[in-house]
Image (spheres, rainbow, N blue to C red):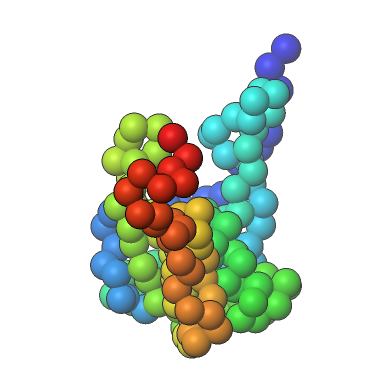
Length: 150
């Protein structure tokens, strides 16, 4: 038997590929978990964290599924209650990437006074500006032929 859950999200969805990096935005609704069209390995629907965002220059708020880096940055900036995230100025950053071989554009929403970096494993982090230096990528390079792991 196939089970379906009612989709509660209404309205247009933002397309990161149509947004311009550097534009301003603000969250205008509480962020809520919503079933995604993608499935977990056990067949259950993945959950996405959806809110409405008003983007500068666009006529109406649009739905956005917030990624983990954005959520962590919002928690650091404003706390764990998504009601408190609403109304604060955010800066849009986009990044072209491949997911499962498909070209996509990731959307990050950066609170004022924060910046996006990549950690040592290449994952995006949103941190307070000046909080830490850029993480080192890689390690010490030995002289050729000396203590090489291969």
